[in-house]
Image 1 (cartoon, helix red, strand yellow):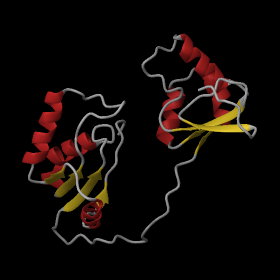
Image 2 (cartoon, one colour):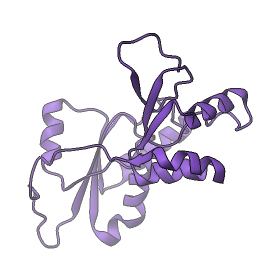
Image 3 (cartoon, one colour):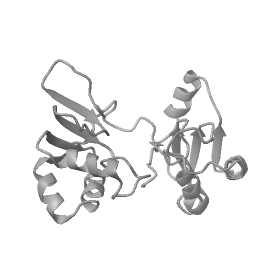
Image 4 (tube, helix red, strand yellow):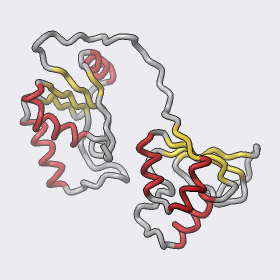
Length: 205
């Protein structure tokens, strides 16, 4: 991304590469550069990779070990030597809201997993559905899902209406799943307070 003139000497980007002349760094969540639709030989890919390896790029911050290893696997040995001196792992900070579980699970009672979000496919909702179908009875856990369950974002690979309709039918017919296409925020907080584990896996998970 070309950066227009800004005050300050260093640019800190997220998931993007600067191929201008400014000193810069980047925090990223999966892969750099994010051009999965282009081949490694594509001119744009080459320009972005060269910018990543240049001295103008002073730091590369992966938000997880998975992100770090994903980037490393995409590089040659000579590229790894360039990148590893400025590659760090810094998970996003999240303050604890409670020191202990607020909802105790009684002996023999099912564990309740909670998924909330519009990006059902991109954020792992389908993976949770499969987990309940395949393991819910064995390990005695249920799921509450608040999501429209539609293909609505750039990363959704499942866009066929028939597939989406099939997922919705499976959610409706599974006795271990309570599915709400939408709820008022007050009700979401109430349902969340009654669950045991929040679930937000990624497509990679």
